[in-house]
Amino acid sequence: MTAQAMQVPAPTLEQRMLALGQAAREAGRTLAQATAEARNGALRQAAAAIRRNAATILEANGRDMAAARERALGPAMLDRLLLDAKRIEAMARGLEEIAALPDPIGACIAEWTMPNGLRISRVRVPLGCIGIIYESRPNVTADAGGLCLKSANATILRGGSESFHSSRAIHSCLAWGLRAAGLPEAAIQMVPVTDREAVGHLLAMSGHVDVIVPRGGRSLIERVQKESRIPVLAHLEGNCHVYLHEAADPDMARHIVLNAKMRRTGVCGAAETLLVDRAAAARLLPAVIGDLIAAGCEVRGDAPTQTLDRRVRPASEADWRTEYLDAIIAVRQVEGLEAAIAHIETYGSHHTDSIVTADIAVAERFLREVDSAIVLHNASTQFADGGEFGMGAEIGIATGKLHARGPVGAEQLTSYKYVVHGTGQCRP
Image (cartoon, rainbow, N blue to C red; front, top):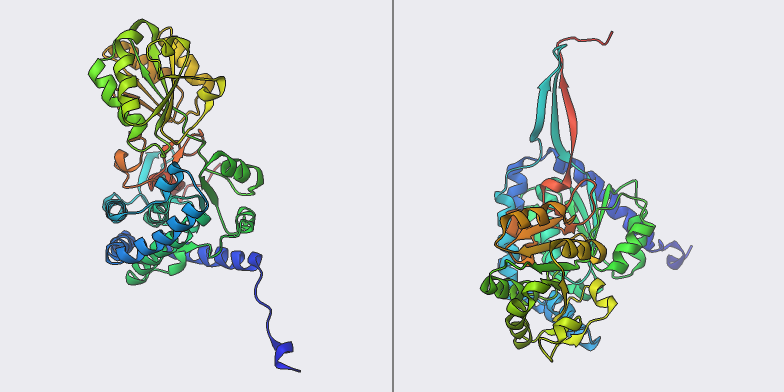
């Protein structure tokens, strides 16, 4: 037999993906028994590795950015993809903040004693293995890997092709942290190819993966929800609103709207629609519109809004439903609180919505009746972020209503089991 005939064929992509799943399942069992000190130590070591390898990460990101510019990706996508010294430090600091959080594993959620003497506790446990599919943001590699490690879940990361080199460089730092802490590297794995077929294989690995978390645009979310054989923890796009009630403070309104729209236009918490009480539009809107346009934002408005500033372009019906992720905002005048709530219910994505008003009763009604994962009073929608909620980081903002809603941090990546202590009881 020739040497050529004896060669073992290279594994198929499906086989490679299954190998990732098998390794993750084994690593997950180890993580579930690991101490909080070991997991926190891995997080801190990974943070140190990110700082130590900042130049390598920036070089990898430069390759991704160059390829993205060649593909003529838009400004919002480029902003999501870009890493700089500040963002790299934020990743490292986020891992340290996650490490400093209370350990969610083994925490007793509730306990009680039955009349027959049985002592019952509800205790947090890991979900197991989490598959995370995301698009252009390379920082998700650190956030997702760190949160899964904190919650003792193994994870398989499938980043977008746009951020492939950046994500691999960041992942190598997470692997270093696991090795340094004596934990299995397979606890955080990255799909080693950009082939979209890998996503299909991951979605079919119900024997190895317990939960799928997609983080990206509508097309990705819809594909995952359609094809997955595994439970999905998803969020839709962030069609977020700021509503200026007639009792809004004009200066506060200006600052909040400008920040909510223009701080970072490419994040899911960026405001996309501005609603204003018609009775206060002439008092509130001109300065707000002026600030937005001066900052480089295109303003699209309904007919009454256009009369206040000739630079406002006409808004179409589609604008009320659009997540721009760009320097564009739609403005509509409404006839009071009920009309604002009705607009948000009709066009919103149940992500994040804010009211600006000095009327506490109106604010409380808005917070109670707007059915979104995050509702705010007198604050920018850009606070829709797990880090800003004290979670260290987030995997995403869940807009569904089962298992988790809002920022998904370490605690939200746990389930629970019941632990029952008896003294010989038998059921009659």
